[in-house]
Image (cartoon, rainbow, N blue to C red; front, top):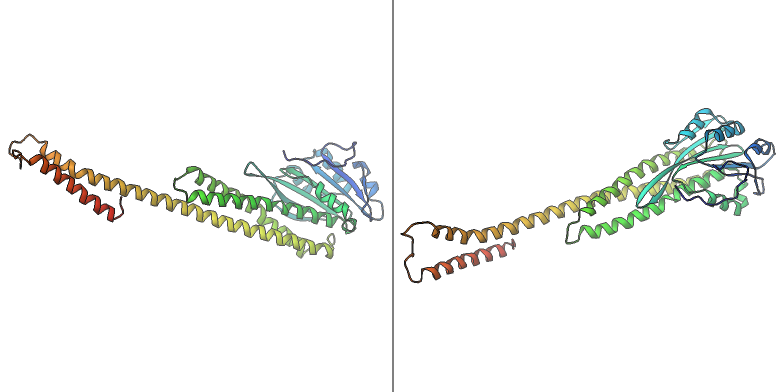
Length: 336
């Protein structure tokens, strides 16, 4: 479970309602209960911002009535496991993005479903997802941002989601640098190959999240519609630039990991070849005395130099000389 930041919340709201607030034109916040939403929307200015975490169906149905949300969008928000996308339902936009957190060197993914209307923003979080309290705090510190309406708050959430990918990329980059040192170490480590594979697998999963997010941001930038004004589009373009940069970094790391795996395999193959050459050289050195001694181990009477006084020393000297010549030959060939 992700760590959830403490927020000001109305005690009468269900536990899954992290925040439910009304912001007037000056950016002043007023915490309200769900049943008050329709009353607050009757005002001439301001908007309502509701944040949920893994809500019950009953809570979503209440908000569907309050905001007039489409059944298909509510069904997606309930089931989660959606691909990043943006869809228009009458007077509201439905945006789905994936969130990510690095836990024990593994990426844990979640989802955020955002409903954007003329005077409301509803966010529904599932799985591994940090609270958007930091986004709301940033907006509340700069009321002029809130004066741009709920679309700017949606930008703040998208920017927060994309920026949370950056620490993950930095962590992966540091891990790859450490693994590169292990690759060129003297001793082969199976765990190094396992970590390289796991890292590339995580990057492949992350690319499946970031790549479609670019399409969502590009669509919002090109076709903002009446719910997103021109001032917010400029900020969305900045978020898109960050997403493109992260996607490029993922591709670069994937290529580097592929190269690292190939280099590791080549180094292991070379090391095995060197070992085979050394074993072959030592086998040849042992073969010479083995051959000679095997001859003289036969049960024959008429063997060369068998009855000579210096036969045994000559035999030892000949075997030693042959071994020395073979040793120098293999040493020159760098087999030893």
